[in-house]
Structure formats: C-alpha cells, structure tokens
Image (cartoon, rainbow, N blue to C red; front, side, top):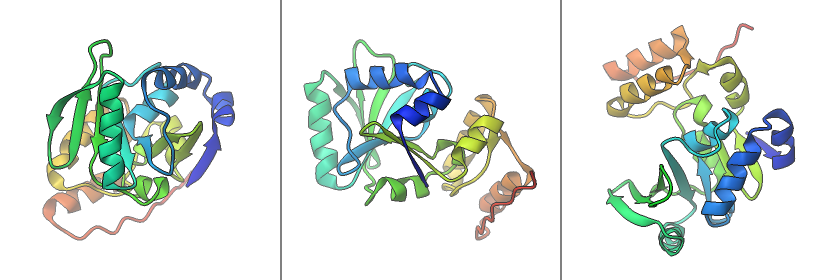
Length: 195
C-alpha cells in the first residue's frame, strides 16, 4: 500500500485541490485513528471531480466510532435517510450526494483497502494523506478494471457494469475470475502484468 502526502498527490493530480477543499468544508476532520473516506469518492477526486458524484463512504475502526461519526454528521446538517445492517446513509439538503457510514469496521486503512473489490477503488483519504493499493494509480491511469478481492456474486455484476460505464475495461483474467466466482469456484487470483 502507498501512503502519499496531499502535496505530492496535488503535483500529479492538480484537480484534487478542489475536492479536498469541498471535503474540508462539509465534513468533520477524518483521522486514520478513528474514521476515513475510501472508495469511489476518493477515486472521483483523482478523476478531476470537485465533489463526490454519488456518495461518500466513511469507514471506521470501531462500532463506537461508527456511532460518533453518525452524531457528528447530524450536527453538521446531515439527516438519516436509510439504515441497513451494513450501513447508515445520510443526505444533506444542499449537497447532491449521500454520505454513507459502512458498519463493517477495520483495524486500519490498510486493512480496509485490502478488502475493497476493484484495484481502482482502493483509494482512501484521511488527515491530508491519500492511501492507495499497490496497483491503484497504474490501473486508474490505464483505465484497467482488475480484481483485488471479489465480492459476493449478487453485488459483482452490478459493480462490474458500473465501472465499465465509467470507462474501465476488465482484462481476460478478470472476466475469468468473475466467471469462476459466479460458478461457485474457489477464487485464487494472481496478479499478472505483461507490460
């Protein structure tokens, strides 16, 4: 995993500045010791968006942090819009996206990123640092859709379609891995590059 200071990310991706400013204006300070943002919203920043396009996913270290973050969001004007066993979702009257607190807790940002399905979604932000999986930046730039850890087959196809619609292309090994997953085979994914 790669941990990169904000200034270094800004050199490579100048559009990140607007995203970070928007984040600072609308959310509590995030910390790798309590909670952080990960997934598609952080990927949006690298793709040049000034704010998340659909939602922003918060991950926490403990269930106590999940509860405290929910209270903080309400204090900042967010209101509960949906509960499930997996997450709490909040909406804000002046923002076009939702904030989601994932209830599965992780001991660290590294642990969290290790459990994210696609390499292009292995992005996190906390305390002016960006965190990436080993292949994330390469796969983002090449628009390659490669598996990090497959999710249950019920979520797999909709997420595959979503990323293809975003312009990412799965390679043959990824498609084979998806096929084996759907067929119920055990998954043992080995990352190969022939560049």
